[in-house]
Length: 331
Image 1 (spheres, rainbow, N blue to C red):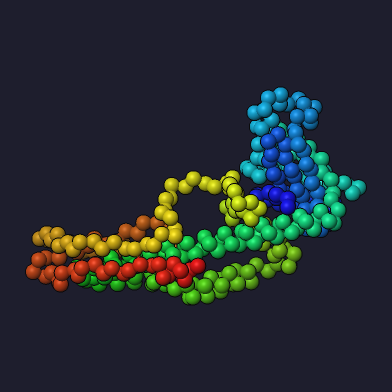
Image 2 (cartoon, rainbow, N blue to C red):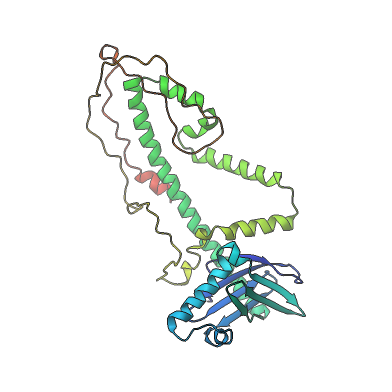
C-alpha cells in the first residue's frame, strides 16, 4: 500500500479538462514523491535524489544536510505562504502536464508522468482510506470536546448554586437579561439540541450560497484540505508504529483521557463578610452591543451583604459524582 501525503493543496491547470487538481508531496531523505490528480487522472514524480537536477541549476547540494534543506524548501514552496505558493505554476500542453516553481529566490521543475488506470484506482483507494481515518479522528476529537463541556457544566452548576445561596439570584438574572443573544448557550449542554441547531445552521448557510454543484464540490474539497490538523492521522492505518509528523506542541495539558474524572469535594468555608457602604449605583457593565464577542465579560460590582442581611449559609458543595458512565456513553 502506497503512503500518500498528509497534506494536500489545490491548483488550477490551464488546458486540462477538470482543471482543478490536488497536489501533494511526500518528502524523503534526499528526494520526494509528488502526486497530482483531478480524480480522473493521476500524475506522479518520484525523485530519489535531488542531487543531479539541483547541480544543473547551480545549487550547492554536495552535503547531506544541503540536500535535506533543498527538499524542505520544495515542500515549503508547495504548501506554505502565499508568496511562495504564487510561484507554483501548472499548465497542460499536448498531453503533457507541466509543473514548476518559479519564485524570485527559488526555481524547480517537476518531471511528472501520467499513470495508468490501475495506478489511479490504487491511488483513489488510498485517498478514501485517508478520509475514513480523518473522520474517525474528528469523531474522537468531538467526543473529547463534548466530555470537557459536560465537566464544565457540572462545575458551573456547583458555583451557580452556591453563589445564589450566598448572594441571591439578582446578579445572575441581570447578566442573562443583558446577554440575551447567548441565553441558549448558558443552559446546560444538550447534545441532541446542539446537533439539531448545527444541522439547521449548516443547511441554511449552504442555501444562502447559490452555486452550481461543481462549485459546491470545489468548496467542499477546498475546505477539507485547508484544515491540515484534520489530516494529522490520515496514515495511521498503515502501520502499528505510526508517528505523526505535524502535531503542534500546544500548552494545553490533559491527563490520560481514559482515566475516570471526578469533581473533588472542597471543605466547607464561611464567607468573608465586610460591613461596607453600598455603592450609590451599579453601573450596567455587563451589556454587550454585538453578538458573540468571545472574551472576558465584565460583570457589575457585587453588592456586599451586611451580616444582618445575610441569607442562609452556603451548603456543603454537592459532589456531582463521576462521569465514567457518561464517558462510556460517549464511546
